[in-house]
Length: 462
Figure 1 (cartoon, rainbow, N blue to C red):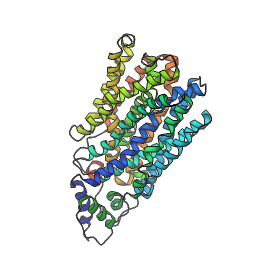
Figure 2: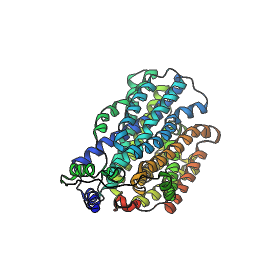
Figure 3: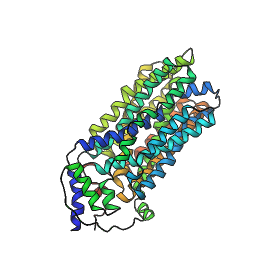
Figure 4: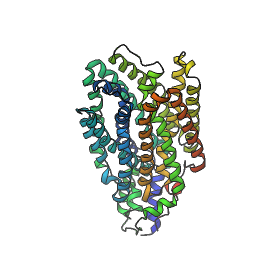
């Protein structure tokens, strides 16, 4: 068999029409991110109840509870990213969801704060593991024309997870006592994940991994037939060199600084505010209440308004623009608008407290442009800038760095807010966003409209 035949198969994937196979993959991958978002951000509503139930008064413990899952995600992203490059995407797909299911339930039955922190950390390992595998799997299946749209649709399910979490929070405080309400909120995270575990375990290995890493042309042709409906007769495997992971990562160090660094900075701001939304909304006078239940209801309502008015639209605007405007431009513009919004809040907090609708608009714009830009693009870039042999490793390092940044700042925000005040903390977020703007411009390149082999410099099969 001519070696060019193997590469021809990937060309067929790149030119394939979007169809049922792609939609199924978007759903199976996307439901993981629905669950990821629910599990991470539900704590923004549940945390004030947990503080009251367990009489948590020091900001350090509050920060640890909020950040535990994010520190777990740091471990999970790097671990699963490495494993998926070595033994395949299919081999581990679905295991990360099982971890999330088990420890969502365990966290709901926590009998003390240490058990809650540990179970949230372990849940986070599953959350982190979902990032490199789902994104890479979707990217390696997608066609060139709609690859950005398909991968961003997977990620956009996070928006529905955010909104769903806010609604579950509202429902919980109405139906249950406070001690049951927070347990229901955390445990319910197992439900959406249960529906797609089986489907994930049945999904085929990606054609690029089969070809570039295993040299298995038959497996590649089988998936090409599944996606395109065209049968290709092949009879030989191709020889592939064993990847030198260290050498490959050294070759792509500039991109690694760009993808890991920009995502690290973004998640510091985004998760730091999202998980601590209750703290910010209370500081800004939007989440008061005569009773704990009333306060939680107001926090959940505030989260729902922000999610519905700004966050969910942001994700889907990104879906519409990503393959037209491009990844790089959306990312630096998003960072820039976030920085401006944070700076306005930091400088004009006193006035904005007297004009709460205006505050909500400015604060909401930071979430809108976060999702139009870096929240989506930082997820996509690592699937396109690294070759198949280190694609999930590069993505895992980038996502892991992001969740480390998220965990650090989620932990620090209650401490910093208590010592410096909310306006100073938001000022720090502005500076972080401006640094993200510059880093994006100098380290990343545009990838729209190109094959994964072009964007990553992946050598053809030889």
